[in-house]
Image (cartoon, rainbow, N blue to C red; front, side, top):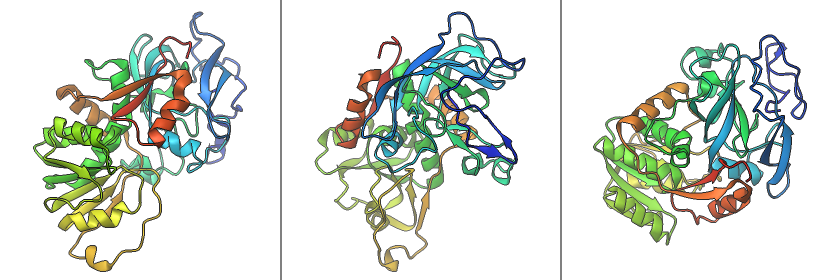
Length: 371
């Protein structure tokens, strides 16, 4: 099964079935077609040092859910934080992966917006309570009862997945399944970070030029901004990619910015980059931390924050972010740089991400169902 029993809203459990037990069919549940198997296979995290190949029961979708045949799933640094013990799932085992592109196999009785056979995108935000002050004010990304794909519920390192249709996205046509997956997190978080920088930020520094960096650079350039790319020292491949996409400058993150920046977008999870970025931004500039986890930020003198410089974080995403970015991706054709791995090679993809060896985004091809 793909849901956890631990998350509660008020006094009613959202789902009271344990992770590896399938609930019986109910009148509110759409019976899946006969072609849907009784089990699915996945690369799962059980608290060890690596993912392992597992088989799980596969249940029918609940009222608002879609049953998805996974075609491809992106490999995100958040997945690495889970495997490396920096983010703790509430229950184990869990299947990582929250950049999921697949095909709808079955729909719950109340699921809207998708039909059997549709292509669907499943992102990090699995669901929220829909009624707290955060949800009511358009800030559902801050909902205290939010659940996240690949952390609270099984994700896309799998042959099949369940997703809440209310939080799923329509993938723009023109992108293959593999190249569409990074749009669902790297692209979305980059988009939200760019919006946090402000519309008047014309010179944008991007620190960490991987999956998110190479997509947000294109979004910024599309909007007429100037981009400066800061990479891991010696990462000539990422610097070459940045230049090929139109960056005015690309170099090591240890180097000072060639010009004062209006905003710095940080995607590398290195806290030491915060004071470095503050030195690079002009008075009134903003440093945006785009990751879900970052190493400790070292102390720094107040003078580099003074003159109305600002440091802020980005937390998760909203459905409005998703729709806004997918509309941009339909209007503007992003060049998506990917490295593709089989599902069973998920550990290799994570290892290469950990070592900084991937240029662009890593993606698991889950289409053949054999891993």
